[in-house]
Length: 203
Image (cartoon, rainbow, N blue to C red; front, side, top):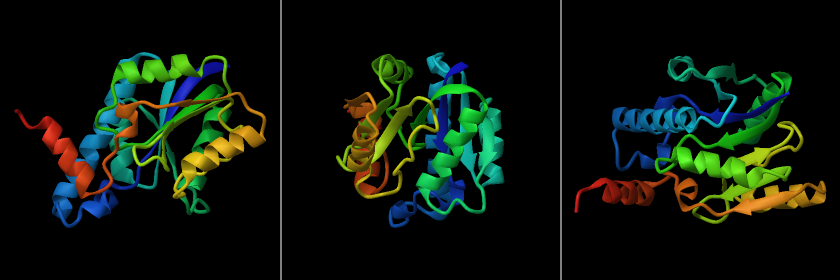
């Protein structure tokens, strides 16, 4: 059995970041979504801590971008209508590949670093489930689970963090919650985008 694979779900870049439509043009939003995706995949590769990367998508454009980073690709099935179903199908795909664990990461984490990836895997040692809550306190930005298909996920739900914790406890899993501000920061709406631009702007 292999070690941990990363799993990154990504819709077509042109359909991504719809909540930024009041701030960015359609072309700019697609370019921004592609930049976030590229950053996450490059960071995962640079961490040197993973046995592989699997991108789950319904888009040929995303598939080509993922393969350019050396990632494997699983296309969304017709029956996967929710984010949780897409991710669960991806985790099942990791299990079929022989992965010992899956690290689910969202594709919009601009502050994610290789050190963060390595730290998450170190924190997961001795556990069955690791969860990183998003900055809003209710969503989940990262989830490590061993084996990959051990637990149905709740991604896409407004209360996914609490749901993941509850499911892990109900299943009797060895659970650890990690609070990491860089992994917690994602870009969903205009305020997040403004915060990111403020951090990037020279003082």
